[in-house]
Amino acid sequence: MATARSFASTTFRSLRTRNYKLFFFGQGASLIGTWAQTIALGWLVLQLSDDSGVAEGLAISLQFLPTLLLSAYGGVIADRFDKRKILIITQSMQAMIAATLGLVVIAGVANLWIVYTMILLFGFAQSIDNPTRLAFVGEMVGPDDLSNAVALNSSLFQVARIIGPVIAGVLIVLIGTGPCFIVNAVSYVGVILALMAMDGAALHRGKPVQKEKGQIRAGFRYVWRTPELRLLLLLTAIVGTLAMNYPVVMPLIAKITFQGGPGVYSVMTIAMGVPALVGGLLIAHRADAGESVLFKSGLCFGAAIVIASLAPTLGLFLLFIMAVGASQIVFMSTCNTMAQLRSDPLMRGRVMSVYVIAVLGSTPIGGPLVGWISQEWGPRYGFAIGGVAAFFGTLVLGTMMLRARKATDDAERAVKSELATPSITPLR
Image 1 (cartoon, rainbow, N blue to C red):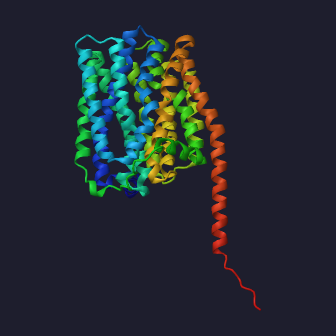
Image 2 (image 1 turned 180 degrees about the vertical axis):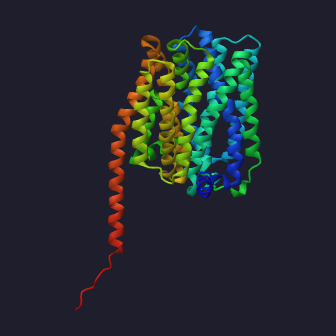
């Protein structure tokens, strides 16, 4: 019993901070709605496009195209203004867009171009919301609990990945896709109220960055001139481009490879979410988040995707996809934490904007490509290419990061050893 209490106390230590606790539970409600919408959106596009993989890839591309184009501006905005107020605005915008899309679908007037337009508008709001929300975590908990808070956020994402698809699967089968978007719109109320209820004086705010010319370029230059960040973000860009296209490839695997319906798609998503939740909690319990964890989890992530893509039956696919979910959460949580801890606080918003571009902004390139591969050669190939990219990307760039970290550690030990050695003045 004492061991269980100790584990819980360490794993959930960030929840002792009131502002983060408010955000955690408010964000939880919102993420459940987001996952319900994600399932519904993938199925809606398939219905409207006669099972087109290219249409599925284009939908995801449009959602994240603004992230590619505007997230750098979002990072500057996050560094210059009150992040909490920015999030209230962006979350409200996303709620209104989701409600509009839901009403259009329920009214029976939805077509691909209307859906694409709503997706694009949703993407504009996300391009500001994502870097701001990631950088805001550090303001709520401070640097000591940042790694824990990032891991708990990832675990929360997985809880939502379990609950949201269940809600979506039931609603789609019984009523249709439209109500899922309404559920998502209502779910934003929780996080908006949580943000409004926070104590602004308790936030760990740095000095706001003043408006200057070239702030976006300065952010990219800072990342490029910092070897640890450069290698890390190159790796996340590779993974984001080719391995993180589940909304594109999973509906196709469910419907084409295994001849299933929305229920099968939901079960696949849940199968990834359950072990990912366990992985997220284990990362939250640990205090370290470094190159070694990133290297091992990245290799496991890539290998698990390739093995899952070869599964001959749905049962085996669900088994292997659980390994994909667990390794992915460890890998991405470690990337997120390292990007924040290895960056200057005055640059954190811009660094996280580059991180968002690497992970999500690469989707407009990878989404259509994976959709096209899935349509031409089959969903298994579209899925497998991401695993190959993740494995070899980690093997090459991860090895370089391990060597760079070892060199840095050796240099720091040498300096400490020199300082600890007392100097002896020779007698005259």
